[in-house]
Image 1: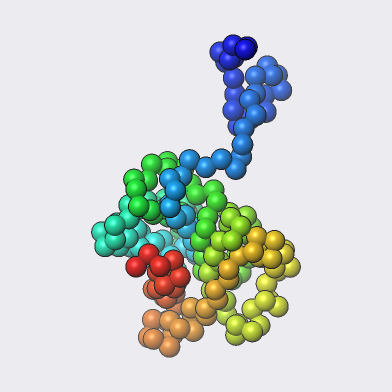
Image 2: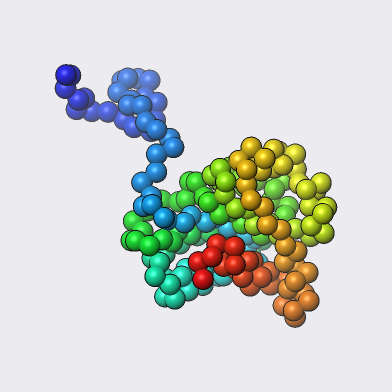
Amino acid sequence: ATMPPRRFTVGIDDDVTHTSLAWDAAFSAEAPGTKRAVFFGLGSDGTVGANKNSIKIIGEETEHDAQGYFVYDSKKSGAITISHLRFGPGPIRSSYLVKKANFVACHQFGFLERFDVLNIAEPGAVLLLNAPFPVEEVWDHLPRVTQEEIIRKQLKVYVIDAYDVATANGMAGRINTVMQTCFFAISGVL
């Protein structure tokens, strides 16, 4: 047996000293049963506030531990926001953003054209999509690359026109409550 190297790098390809070790990019240290959800929203649409509230509800009203990380521009209003939520039966000790989500929510349909929203979705994940179209027309409005990724990863897709639902219920423009309700209903956490 050879002695392990005293100095090495992991996660980068060090072509100068040749001390890089191979690593498994698919490795996950997440505890079994941990749910990982990522929400793409627009600054000021209430997505971050709703997700902070969701983490509080999950942590206080269920047997689950919960964690949330929120990524947004310093201007926040009008910029993309990304909420990373974890919850599960045991302690959550993940100090990094979600890399493979089993639930992805896209609160702004236009993001599908501008961002690779589904890159973070693991195979078989759920996609919750806010779409301003009748359900039978949504597929035809999706970018082709999004259609291909949904098929390739065999995603379960749920669609709602949250703006229409919010307006019909006297909450014009406040889609966060509608999308939060959908998340709780689909995830089964409550």
